Length: 380
Image (cartoon, rainbow, N blue to C red; front, side, top):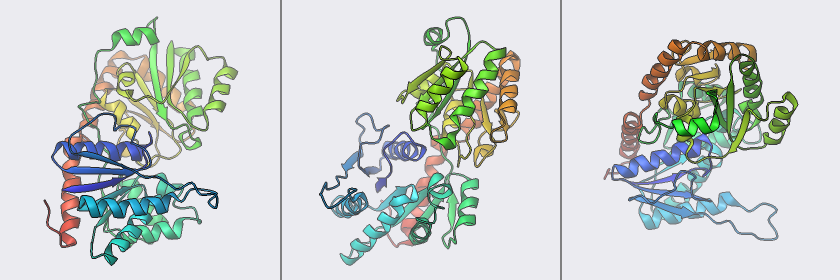
């Protein structure tokens, strides 16, 4: 099967999922074409059956902002035609579902039909998509897609609440590739981070307000009062400066490390004792799943799709959004009870195995075949 994947090439969850999905499909013999403005972050090495098509926007004095949507539409038309793609799988509704629909209509005028599958990831619905400036276009584009998937039951429910959706939405969960994310011996690495045997706590995100990274720091402050510990903040984003100021204000700069964006995040998770995810909104919680695959229990909020991933009292603990005291109390309870921590590590791994790529990938393949069959196309 020849599949075009359209995504944002960043470290955000939608780009990560799209890239890992494409890599998994390529290993199974499908030809996968990534179409975006920059090579995806996790597309870091050559792999058979993977192709990349860069989208370039014209820099013309008349345009205050380069018309990326138009350039992407033209690129999709070109790649579908000349690479003979069977379908397009677009990740994140804005603007990719709309662009996919436009490309499909252009191709129809040339006697070529290509089905469009849209995967909804979260903020494209709950934050951006529900904005009145975008909502009518988002709703239209979802309804005009040949197939629609969502990464959690929670996100499906929210989509149906926010929009008048005529299409069926199939839930296909996010996944983890155990070839990459697994517990490994990094004791020498841990000693460099925590030379006196401190507990290592990790948070990773894109440092936007919705991730509530300041809550993670406040939770850590309370943990540190009771348990010798270090906090690793992985990622970057608009809130970083204010977060650095917060660390200075509470006097914990020596205990909190800002590591920036990291490609080999699994090596950092391998030395972690606890993972913090205090988000205001999470459609699924892919970062938490990656931690759990590395046998790291999760302390999280109970928002969105997180309860579908993190099992309260088994793989970690959940608290209400903003309840810093509860999150800290649960963290201290785990970190000071070695037997409980060991059991939660095992539980986290067992839960993560439910989302193994080898279990989820066939669901996408079956869905592709269903959409192609409905469109009257043969599957190869």
